[in-house]
Image 1 (cartoon, rainbow, N blue to C red):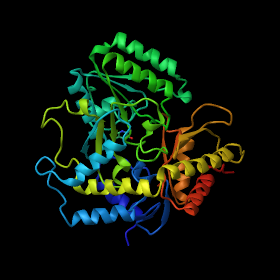
Image 2 (image 1 turned 120 degrees about the horizontal axis):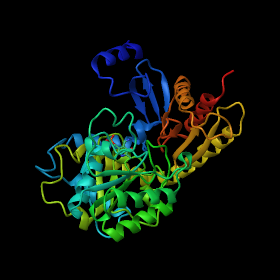
Image 3 (image 1 turned 90 degrees about the horizontal axis):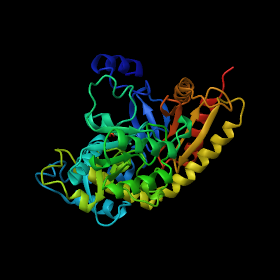
Image 4 (image 1 turned 90 degrees about the vertical axis):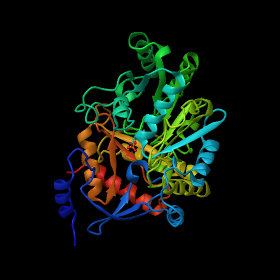
Length: 427
Ligand code: PMP
C-alpha cells in the first residue's frame, strides 16, 4: 500500500517547491465533508479545497449532472461551437447576480483568469489603464493579478517588475489599525500623487477578503467607492471568487450591501469542484469588448457549466444560504465560549458573515499582537485530530472555516470539537 510518506518523497522529486501544500497528507477519496487519505485515515474537511466545496465533495446532483454531460460531449471550445449549458448558466447568473439593470456573463476557468478579464473589460469600456486595489487582497498568481494582490511574500517578491498602473490602498481592518477614513484618505492621496481619477479604469476589492483574513469591507467604504466610481466613470469590480455562492449567507456577498458593483468575478464554489470561473456585469460595460477580445480554449467548459447548474439548484433546494447562517452562528457561539477559557490558546476578533468565519490567534489574552506561529500550530494539531483546517491573514494569524455548507450536523459538531482540542493549551 502506498503511504503519505512515500507520496511525499515522490512529490518532492517530481514537483517544484514553488507550489506548497498546507497538509502532508494525500487525498484518496472524499464525500461531502469527509476526506480519506492514501492510508485510509478519515478527516473532516473544514477547508473545502479553499472555498470550492460549499456544496461538499461529490454532491450527488453535481456528479449526476457531470455524468450526463460526459455522455453528450466534453469539449468543443465555446469559440468554435457554442452550447446550451453555457447559455443557461449565463442566464441564471444574470438573473441572480446583484447587478443594476441588464447583465451579461462570460465564463473562464480559474479565479485569476476571471479577475484579469474583468480588468480587461473595464479597460476596454473606459479607455483607461489604472487599477486600484487594496492591501491584503488576493486576486491570483498570474502576472496582472499578482500585481493586484496586496501581499509581497510569497506572491510577488521573486517575480520582477510589477504590472504598470496598479496601485494599493490599505484595506480597513481593526487588526491592522486601519479604519475607513484612513483608507479613503490614502485613496484620495493616490488619486492626487499617483494617478488622476480620469486615468483609473477600475477599483477592485473583495467584499470579504479571503486570503487577507476574512475582513469584511465596511458598508461606508463600499458606498464611498460607489460614489467615487460614479463621479469619475470608474468601473467598480467586486472579486467574489472566495465569498460567492452562499458562503456568506447570500448567493453573492455583494447582496449584503445597498450599492452594486459594476462587475463581479466568481469561481471556486461556482462549479462544486470543477474548474469554472466567470465575470457577470452590466451589459453596457460587458459589451464594450470587440468580438475575439475575450475567451479561452477551455473557458466555460461544458462539464463545468453542467456542474454549476447543479450547484445553483442545490443551493436553492437545500437552502444553503440559510444553512450558512445557521452553521456560522453555531461556530461563532462555540468560538466565543472558547475565547473565554484560560485552558485555550488566546483567540480574538471572531468574525464573519454567514459561514465565512474566522478568528485570530494572539500572543496573549486581552492583547492585540497577532501570533502566526500559534495559528500554524493549531492547523498542525487539528490535522493530528483529523480536521483539515486552513490559516490566512497578513501574518498567517487567522484561522478560517470553510466547511461544506452541506455538512451533516453531527459531523459539524465533531469538527468543532476537534478544533477546540487543537486550540487547547498543552502543559
Ligand atoms: N480572487 C480571490 C478573492 C481568491 O480568493 C482567489 C483564490 N484564492 C483568486 C482570486 C484566484 O483564484 P485562482 O486560484 O482560481 O486563480
